[in-house]
Image (cartoon, rainbow, N blue to C red):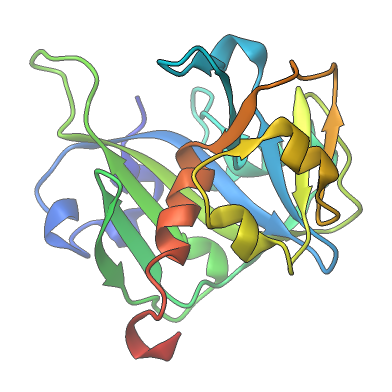
Length: 224
């Protein structure tokens, strides 16, 4: 697995959780928005799960994915956005970087001067999944802010969820949405390769879940 600090060296030593540790970069994503909407992935059926009560749960995530051999974070991100939405993107400088550890805010990192692509909006640290001598201390998904350079369209995604700017706080305010509520909401839109099963729920996972955690921490330090 790629090393986080080899791909984004500015992060090394920026926080105790990013100091003297082996952190594997398992994914890159972007919170993509334009004047009309925020764009989220509807995950493929193989990732769906059932709650204990039997209700089918469909994940909603950010735009992005894993790194191919030899790719750095930004090369992988731009490739994923082109494959998933058919557009290029312009990255935006975040107000700061939010460091998440086990789904809680562990700190806020100052954004240094320089190009926005040097610094992500969210660094989400997750526990390693396997043991052994080669196991890293943590896994990381890094998330950037960006705007599409053309109108996004569903590419190789199973589904695309659009959320208008005015509907975003409401969308992130709850942990899951019944499909029928999404379909009835004027600020939410679905573009799907095939229909979702009736009675399922949609829930933020990975990047969308991290974004929900971050948005729930407002007001942020410095009034940002």
